[in-house]
Image (cartoon, rainbow, N blue to C red; front, side, top):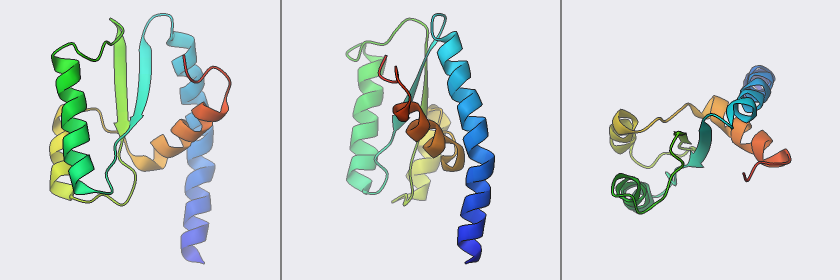
Length: 115
């Protein structure tokens, strides 16, 4: 029962902040493209390989990015390996789940989320 109350309290705080953040992203879109990505963190092989391949594609110019882009990642629970998670946090912008899950879901519900 307490976990449900905590979850609802967390959502009550995160959802309004997430809506403001989404509106901010959409306002600055002509200047800077903000992209939100989900890391596959529940399996260690996917967590390491897919993330590394994506980083290499960006580094070597295979995955074309807009000139002024800003990538934000989050790794949903369960995280298979906390050490690897901390290593990825050193080289990538990984934001906390309590904030990014509502941002990702609300953004996908709003029209124009795929631009």
